[in-house]
Image (cartoon, rainbow, N blue to C red):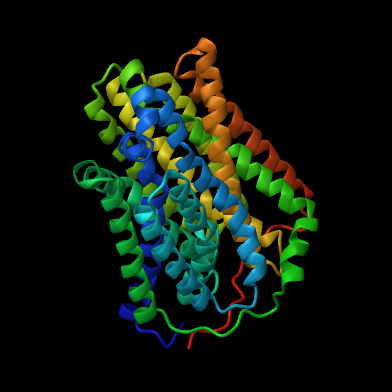
Length: 410
């Protein structure tokens, strides 16, 4: 770390963050281009029933989330002794190939398969790149490392996704995926150019990574992540109908509300990384408290345009503030299995996405109104807080900040 000058250090961190930016694009691009994809990939179904075709094309989102859940722990086990830089490079190659295949595949089924393959490395990238970023920053900076890499994803939600959606609408969804593949390719070159080599990861083994699942604490913290952060996804998934049907705004304002939430996410991840390194326990508890309060505020004021925008910003900020602390907590309760702890965090966040969307849709379909998803989100976040409190209660000693025991950069 000390052998790197400031310019080289920040260039390396930006290269790693750019990979996170690409992952934000590839994860969310389908949400804005479902109609175009349904019309092109399922022309018969689209002609017969647009809603049915859109629902079927929605598997693009579901299959990606499934790939993340499956791939994150699997890659953590298989690559436990692989140097983190080499792993990051290999994952970026996977993203380039699989994302380009998503654009070039001739059938709906093959596109689905390509999306699943692309998702396999998602969680492992954030885990390995976060650890690598923390190594570049030096001891005691795991939270900052995580926040820098995930900050690329939040930047994608703020700026990249709207732009890539416009590109897909004007030039075709295939062009959007090819553009995302180009982002991954640029990140690959940047990592190869700026990130120093590392030695093999020490102290780890496939058995040690799998041993993490023997710990009740790992399961408890993972459950806290999956349940507690699903409160955010219960709001985020239905932000468009809340904007148009609750606040009474035009559809053209939806991107602005999403931008406000994306800005909040960007601010939240930056603050959360610093807070997690200073006091992990307080960051987790304060983060869940902030998420509960922000979702409650949103539920109360979302019917008013100004309240909707402010509430969306606060929900976005609170939801990402807690992410570095939760990842550090999972690594802390899984000693000897750092990559697995980070991978489980990513899997749990994607499970949270599914839980929040599914349960939010259930209460809306029951006729309780679009804001029912937000009130449900409060309950889910409270449950996450209670699970976190139980986890800390079970600790025999005060929780230190998670450390990164990676070999020095060379």
